Amino acid sequence: MGFEQVKPEDFSTFVPGSVATYIQIEQTLSDVGGGGKEGATFKRKALQAAGWKYDQLTGYTKDPELAADAFNRISIILDKTVVLNEVLDGLKAAK
Image (cartoon, rainbow, N blue to C red; front, side, top):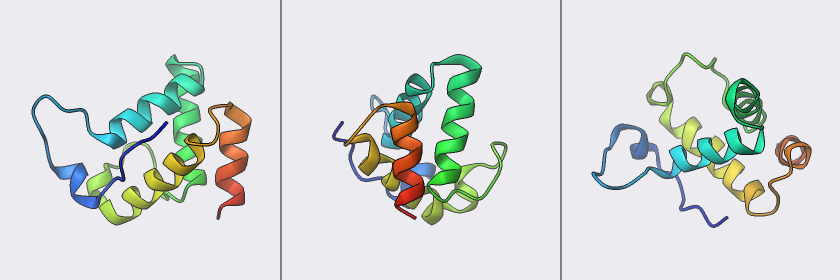
């Protein structure tokens, strides 16, 4: 998919007219998961599999280095596949 690398400062920076890479990755995960509630659940599972240790109510600014690392791991997998089970399997295998 060709996402740019996510950097810790991305979670506290707003660039007008631009969608942050982590937001693009979140949307892609939601789409891969089927959208709606199922997509949100899949996004949460993918983030956890990529190393994000906090619940969905915790903002990425709590641990921006960990969040950036998790999103970059996901980006690598999404470059290879957008098949739901393959994404999760790839993240679990990459640990």
